[in-house]
Image 1 (tube, rainbow, N blue to C red):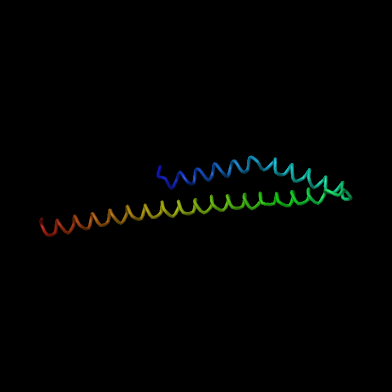
Image 2 (cartoon, rainbow, N blue to C red):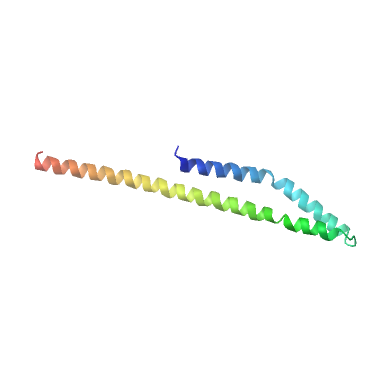
Length: 106
């Protein structure tokens, strides 16, 4: 396997790791929102809401990883297609060169 394919594998591992933490993120976010709703008059609730708002970066992380995986998979598919075309062209060139040599009786 070439190094380009390893990058895709590494990104897919990262993607799976991120998905594995999704339940924890959802739990913390949901529990925090419940606390904010129950404690609307408490003075420190603004700090909790601020922390919960900062958790939205998780969504950006998930989207970014998913985008990178999709992008790499697309690049690998294009690379494989290019490799097939290159092999076909090289084969055609070899056959043509061989035919020319035979015609010239070299």
